[in-house]
Amino acid sequence: MSSLGAFNFFLGLQVDQTEKGIFLHQSKYVADILSRFKMEDERIAKNPLSVNRGITPENTGAKVNPTVYRAIIGSLMYLTASRPDILFATCLYTHYQAQPNVNHMLAAKKIMHYLKGTPGLGLWYPRKDGFDLTTYSDSNYGGCKRDFKSNSDGC
Image (tube, rainbow, N blue to C red; front, side, top):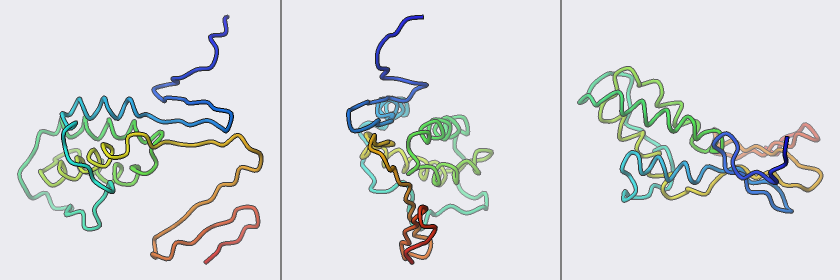
């Protein structure tokens, strides 16, 4: 066995180690999938999911190539390892892989537009002691903050 020093890549994740902590991201993979699906010159979206998605369970609309749709969704699923911000939208669109239509494809591409504007997002693990896990919920648009140490919430 030999020591090769600090690692930069691990299972497709880019690892940036500093004295303050570790940052996991997939910015190279984001660039690769934007290039693969020819979306480098597309517009940028501010969020991965529209409020009114325009997607219904009914199978109406022009059909698209399911192989391309599945390839986009599969690429996005792999990206969720370091991008929890796209997890909900990506999982939502996996339901339509059997018979995707134009609306499904446009919705999946909206995630790609969002990625184009946010390629460097990832997971930050600080080195300092006392790492606190804080979650937020906007399900009621109230934005409650949960404190796991005292087992109380700030609602």
